[in-house]
Amino acid sequence: MRLKAYIQLLSVVLLSGIVSCSKKFDQYLQNPNRAESVTPSLVFTAVANDLNIDKPWSSVSRWNQFDVVNYNYYGDQRYDWTGANWNYITLNNVKQMEQEAKNRGMEEVNPYSALAKFFKAFFYYRMSSLNGDLPLKESLKSIEMATPHYDSQKE
Image 1 (tube, rainbow, N blue to C red):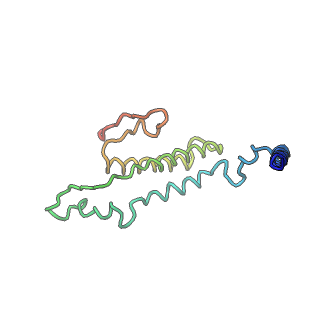
Image 2 (image 1 turned 60 degrees about the vertical axis):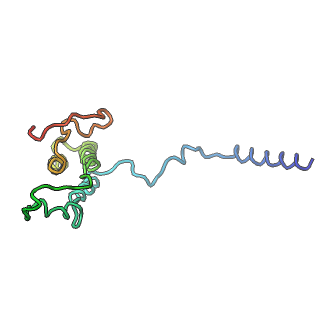
Image 3 (image 1 turned 180 degrees about the vertical axis):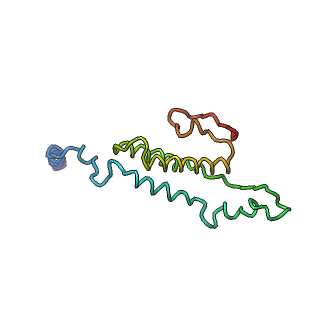
């Protein structure tokens, strides 16, 4: 009998706790500290930091002895055991920087579109030098195109 009273009391307390909630759960999902949009200058900072991706003492610096061909023995062959950086995140940030500039009401030709052209040329040239052929025309369309066509370096 005593156990039945405890269960009834516990049920009443839980039910009253659930019913007494006046705050909607949707309000918990909204984070006032999270930014809804970013400025193009903030995205530019992240992209500019990635210009120095080949930091001192990185694998690129270690293999420079083969790139400068200062020994006849090694020739100009560079045998890396690691992959090269594809700069995919950086190029997506460049695309986002252009989009945020347009969202802010800037004209089609603005300082950020000029910077985006430079960054795309720089990173695509760097990737083409390290990796060879790239999907330049169909790049950065990962959702629409999972297997892009690779353009030759002659194109």
